[in-house]
Image (cartoon, rainbow, N blue to C red; front, side, top):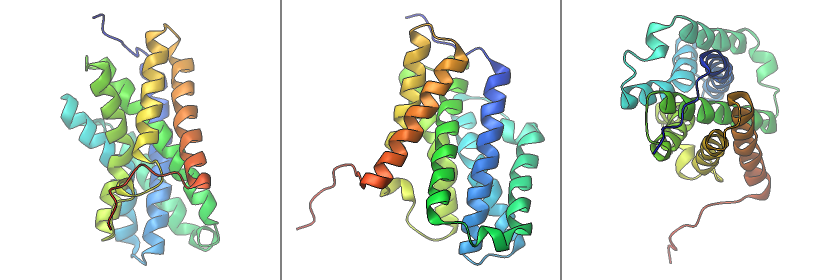
Length: 211
């Protein structure tokens, strides 16, 4: 089987950094809702933005993780946290729908970036798709654990499934010889749209009956 490669380091970096900022803002916003102090806010911004990428990099052998060796990642994460901290009065007025939208955007960006990086490290496409899912949901899972609540990935409307779908769409587009930019766009759109539709339509994966 001919390995699928992403081969666009600049595009991957841009997607990764945008996703880092979006998730940092989302994590810091959750910290405000949890009534954490400034240190807690920064920790949550960092963990939410970079946790999934660190887990992915360790699993695929990209060590030390980019989030540790490239100063731009923590800088972007802390910048996102700082924006939320200094604009907390504005953030408190942000509607829940916008927070959900930001979260869906971060999920889509990270799912695609995670799968793309896994492909470039020679990971099988199926496992690369799983790495996209891990990248998308890892930071949010750490955030929820730190806030002492059940991780949203375990019960939220089609959350991890949306990340997997976006990663799969990107990989399929690459297999069809589409350019990385187009393949990335397709993956991001699939994940984002699926997540937003699931929220508005209250879609859920099947559950075991409790009665």
